[in-house]
Structure formats: structure tokens, C-alpha cells
Amino acid sequence: MTATAKPRIAVTGATGQLGGRVARRLAARGTAQHLLVRDPARAPELPGATVARAGFADSDAVRYALDGVPVVLMVSATESRDRVELHRAFVDAAAAAGVGHLVYVSFAGAAPDATFTHARDHWHTEQHIRASGLAFTFLRDNLYADFLPGLAGADGVIRGPAGDGRVAAVAQDDIAEAATVVLTDPAAHAGRTYDLTGPEALSLYEIAALLSATYEPETVEQAYRSRASYGAEDWLVDAWVSTYTAIAAGELAAVSDAVPRLIGRPATSLAELLAR
Image (cartoon, rainbow, N blue to C red; front, side):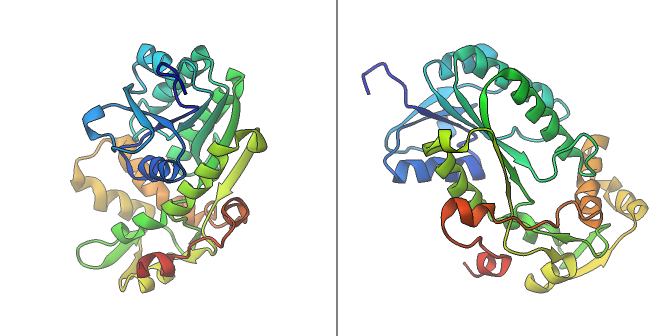
């Protein structure tokens, strides 16, 4: 690599949980990478990594940062009312910069009529990527198994309208390993959509038992009432509640073999994750 050449892989979200995991794995492989972050002071210091200040909303900065970079990991932006618009702006800037392949972190069951409201955002983003002409790979992650302990309140109770539904939650480390595989050999995964799940689909009763908690199903009406005191915007409360109703609807129950096929080992179970 010359003094002015950029690495062949760019990673967004490196200051966060998932993007940071991917960046560390690429560094461990000795793979040079370009980290696009909103705040360079928070970027991880990794061997072979360069850093650019380029938030999704700053199209000029994104276009400059990605000029000459053929492969990009696009970790979806933090949930917000305008997230789809931010995603579209980033995709357009990547295309204008001449990026060849975009690896997008999407969500299980992404569809225009998905129960989980954020899954609809991911579908709209996927459609925009398809229309951009970029080669792509979509990593459709199930719920993060790492976040399941946070479902329980201070009293050790998980409350939500998930009924007896099941969720095939996936460990973030597994997602990061899968993303690293795709980023380092993108042509082999062009045009592919991978459903990344854990090895089993568990009910919230089973998840609560593993967490030494309990699960108390709510009705949808109870769920909205119990969250009204948080003072959150309506779109965010809708997302919170629809996480559970998507489970109840069976939209997060499918178990895929994509993780073991990509990373060469079994997907991590929730019990294994909690034992670490």
C-alpha cells in the first residue's frame, strides 16, 4: 500500500459493539482497514487501521472517505426517526465514491410489512442498495443474544407481549466472525442474503430461566401503558413493543445454518454466551 492508498476494506460503526468486533477481527488477521466514525477520538486504535470522520449524514465526507475503497461494511445507524434517510444518503455517497461491494448489516425478516418496525427500515435500505447498482451482501441478524439479559427489569422480570413465541437470537461475536469472512472474500458472497441466527429458537420463558429471571406476558395494551412513563417518542415505543409482537408472530423463530456455514463452527447458544 502506498502512502496515499487507502485500505481495501472500510468499516462503519467501529466505535460500537458490532462494528468494533469486526474491526478487531480484521486487525487480528493483519488486514488493513479504514474506519469511518463520527468521533475519531473514540475510534479504536488498531494496527493497520486508518480513521476518517464521516457520519452517515455528511455525504461529502463519506464520499471522500470511501474514494478508492472497494469493500465497505455498513453497520446500520443508531435507531432514529430519520434512519432510512441516513442510510440512503450513505449508500448514495458510497456509490458516488466508486465502492464496488457493500456489506450491509440488516435484520431478520426485513419486509415492508414486518411486525418489528425497524425491520421495515432495513427492508427499505436493502431496496435502495439493490437499486444503487452496487454489489451487495445482506447480513440479516436476528435479535442480539448479548442484549437479552437487558430485557429483565430491576425486579428480574421480563414483561412484553411475546406470548409463547420463539426467538433465534444470535451472538454478536458470531455476526462479527461472519462479517469478517464476507469482507475478506466479498466476491464469493455477492448478491447473497444470509439469515444469521443462533442454534436454537427459545421462548421468553426459556430465556428467562437461563437468566434466573421470570417472564410475564403482557397484552399489547399493557405493554404500551407500562412504557408510557419513559417519556420516549411514539416511534421508539412502537419499536420496543413490536420487538415482542414480532416474536409472538413467529417472525424471529426460524433457525438458519448460515452462521456455521460461514464461520466453520456451530453458532453460539445463549447458555454458552452467558457462561463466558
